[in-house]
Length: 316
Length: 242
Image (cartoon, rainbow over all chains, first blue to last red; front, side, top):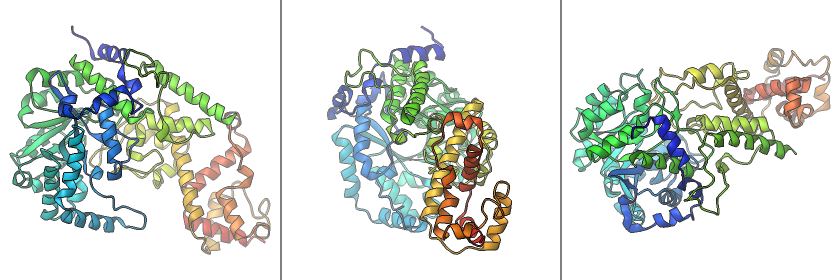
């Protein structure tokens, strides 16, 4: 049956079931999801591996102290895979009375000196509940301004110890050039994450800029953020068709074209249903990492569940 | 009663959201313990007494502004700091904020340009601007109250007064001998939160545009743009009105 996206949205919203009950972490969904043996399969839907960029939990500050709550929420949403951002792992040195420069230096020293056991213990937290850390997201934009090679190596080692297959960063071309030699040394990939900046020639936002950046290293892969790509008037389906072998994951969210706003799934211009079916039908190993920035008055867990349910119906 | 007004408006907002079909309240998979719960906005903080401002806050969040600029204007990442933005400080009822929100900031060296929100209505823009100004005023008030009071420059205070206050006030008329009436500390407190304007707002009164409502708006606009020096200078100038 062919349905338009508008019709699909109505079907999906009309048939919501789990979103209402998910707001309580003690719900049936949550308890069922805590089965540790499920692992990444927990969010393997019709051959498409789903995961979450926990930036979506807008009501949960990203700190390492909140990591247990993060894990609870991932389980409540039935996620078996995560793209873990470094603030969930590293200490926050930006405390009152500490200047940004002092905090940066403290973080640098911490990264250079922390023992591998620290990361192994975090990996175990995720392993124990069956969540795969697929990638480790690092804010290279801040770190690269003044970081040494040793610190970049330490970041890749951290990702590797956490069990990640690659590090990911929001990227620009000159930074990608500098990072070209690092991922291979650690047996990892570097995921290049795009935004929607079409005015900066150094930005990673168009297919052309991706092609250029990917040419810098065989260890580079695209983390195609489809909502930003659409906002930059890119052709997501064409990109996947042409470059799927170099795509590590898609960041799944919705936005409107022409630098438009973020929207709930199905209300923007990203062809989410087609993307998911394309991955499924071609049996591509491209995880779909849910990430959104649209506003909502609902809790992060409820909103993630609504978007996840939309995806499940896309593949039903 | 005030809380009831705020809750009513919130219910109205939720009703509208619910009508989009986004909020299922029953279904095969629904947990009975949470059936009927429509949404969870605990992260927004307590419901504000002023229903218009609460509505502005919720509009700001639903539009997606909070993701980058923070619910209480604590920016994340590269987003503009609305608490300190001179552009926002120059806004009156959305006349500056509106065009920027509608067009976005496509030309930038930031990683992610501000999106355009060309589909927002005039009322949504006004509601968003109302929350931004309110949050700025709250934030600036806290900062200024916590700042140590240093002796200011009375001449600079006179210039500021002539520029920003003299349309409504005069040290020859309503503020004559104000320096004898209030000591420095009380003058400072009156500048930051005038007793005469310190009462709850209501939709009806604000719509009438009475003198106190206008005064509150003007003082609010001054408050969100005061520097610590401005306040110290004004206090020193008004102290000299004896």
